[in-house]
Every structure is written in structure tokens, then in C-alpha cells.
Image (tube, rainbow, N blue to C red):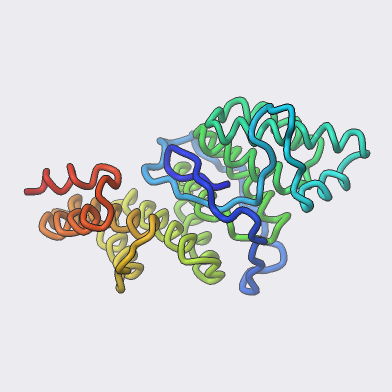
Length: 272
């Protein structure tokens, strides 16, 4: 499962987390004692790949747990208890997929307490907290999940939560780690978008624009969603910086490439 904007979309879910050699075996936990009050919802939440999640709600016939998740639960509890935890995890996954994030979070919190070393539980709880704007909990849970998997899969979401908390130095650190690991073009693009947003938040529009332009040196003939998202954010930054012609042209490219993408057509029309 993956999250995109205000909805949940599906991506290949059984891909193993990449273990980048560039990362240390265990990334030191960042200081969580200096959190500030939770800020506004980030304007461009990134899609992410998560480990395969079980279940689709409260159906009487639930699919079996993925083998790696079942093994993690088996190590965390007795056989009977692990089976109950698995059912609860499936129910939480169904609630998350249905965008009932508060319900998913309520189901997952006791699960995380009972099985703190099960990465799928910590990751899903972190994503649910993120979707609810609970940035501090999202940071705690997603960092725990990444430590357990030695993965950068959730770096864009983690960076966006830190961005909401105005932890701009941490956002840059996560961007550097993601760029060095290069797990996939989509994930790197989403990390780039978050980093550019953090720069723009600090008023560094020129740096934000250059960062996005660097990721768009060769626009694809058949753009994917992450290409369109990057172009949209870049067009918005062009407009904010006063470069209306380039903003109009880039919104136009989006409309030509994917009619109906977000409000690109309206944005382009407003710049005439």
C-alpha cells in the first residue's frame, strides 16, 4: 500500500526494502526532546511505498498475513496471541485503506505496545499518525520502522513530518540520506519535493527552484505521477517567485501531459 495526497493508491507491495550500503547499520535517533508545537499540514504530502499490508477491513474471510509479517508477530508473542495480533493488524490495515485513520491509529497503538519490534505495525501507525497531522508520533513510529528494516522507504514522509515541525536541518539530513541511497526514481523525486518545500518555507525560493529544476533536466515523454507532481510544485514556485511565463508554460505542459491533473488547467488559465 502507498499513500498519495488525499487518497490511498496501490503500488507493487511485495518489493523487499532496499538496504542501501551508503547508510550506517544503525542511524542514531534524532533528538526528540526539542519538538515544537505541531505546525500546519504540509502542502505536498509525498507518496510512499510501505511493506505489504494484510487485510481489507472486517471481512469474515481475511487473507493470510504476508510471511514476513507473520514471522515477526510469531517472534513477538505466543502462537495464540500472535494470531490475535494478526487479526487486529488486518483490521487496522482495512481502516487505513478506507481512510479511517483515527480508527487505524486506535487499533495500532496497543499493537505497537505489544509488538514494538514488528516493523509493519510501527510503519502503519506512523503513516496513520502522519495522515492525522500528528507529526511527533509519525516521526517516532516511522523512525522505529526504518531502524527495524534498515530502509529509507519512508524517508519522504518522515522528512515531511519534520518539515511540519520546522526541523529543517533534519529534513536536509534525510534528503541527503535518500539521495545517497537512490532507492528509486519515484522516492528520490518525492524527497526532492519535500526538500524544496522546506527551502520555500524558509523563503529560499531560488534554491528550491534550482533543486526541482535539477530533478527535471530531461522531462520524460510519458511522465509518471511523480514527474507531474514535481512539475506542479515547480510551476507553483515559478509563480510565487514572479516568473509567471515559466509558471504558465509548465502548468501548460502538465495539462498537455495529463489533462485533469489536480487544478493545473485552472492555474494555467489564471496566469494569462
